[in-house]
Length: 67
Image 1 (cartoon, one colour):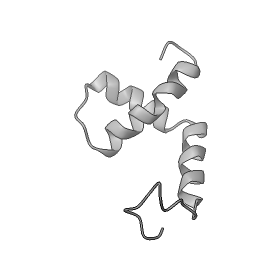
Image 2 (tube, one colour):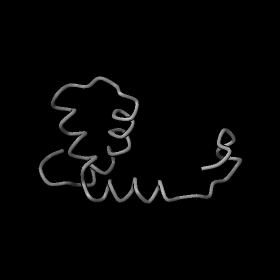
Image 3 (cartoon, one colour):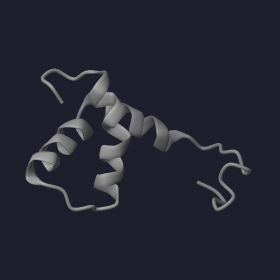
């Protein structure tokens, strides 16, 4: 956000993922920021680890039958 990747960027990463995944129109500058955040190693690892998760708590995710 203000130069090197910082805690502020980590804080906004979930918002960037929502904007991207819900295909919400953003400005070219924000698109660049979102792409930069989504292509960092830490965010890629976070997404890959989440996709490997196979268990869930039914009470927390009643809509989900399986992965």
